[in-house]
Amino acid sequence: MTIHVALLRAVNVCGANRLPMAEFRALLSGLGLARVATCIQSGNAVFDSDRATADLEPLIRDAIATRFGFAPDTFVRDAAGIASALTDHPFADADPARVHVCCLAADPKPDEAALRALALAGDGWHLGPRRITLHTPGGVGTSKLLDRLPRLLSAPMTARNLRTIAALHALAAAHG
Image (cartoon, rainbow, N blue to C red; front, side, top):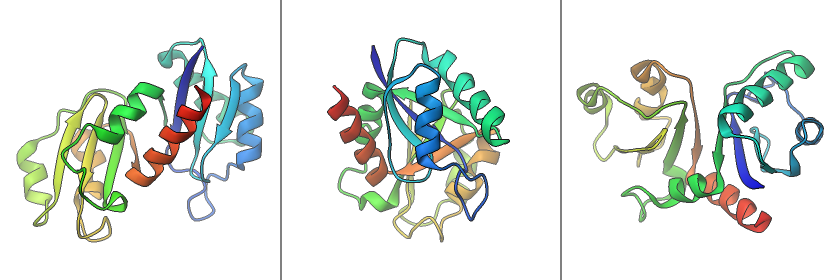
């Protein structure tokens, strides 16, 4: 069995796309996923499965659509992918609340000139496998990078700050 981490986009945000974590855990267990645990209310889960990542993403998304009536973009990574997202970037000394890992369905191919045009002084990014890591020292509320990134990439994505990625990494490590 492989340890996987699921990250859902836009659940439990301002009362929209409500997904109670206890029901989410039950749904995942009902799909045959083992040792399911959730982390915070934004649609993060850690579980064991022998299924391929490519099969898990639509399985989880479609099950949520059937049960809850909405189909969130779903991104699944193995434990090694989460560990890599935590450390594979040049922002190790930055405030972890100001560094966001943006999970994508495919490797990012952003327009670097467009990123530079949106970046404020000190903003930075790092490309990784099926992710882009953003550093916004002024906070995401003042940066245009995170807000406009989905349009620049023309692809669904979900973002988590490094604190959440660290919590997911710790939860996955405890599964091992």
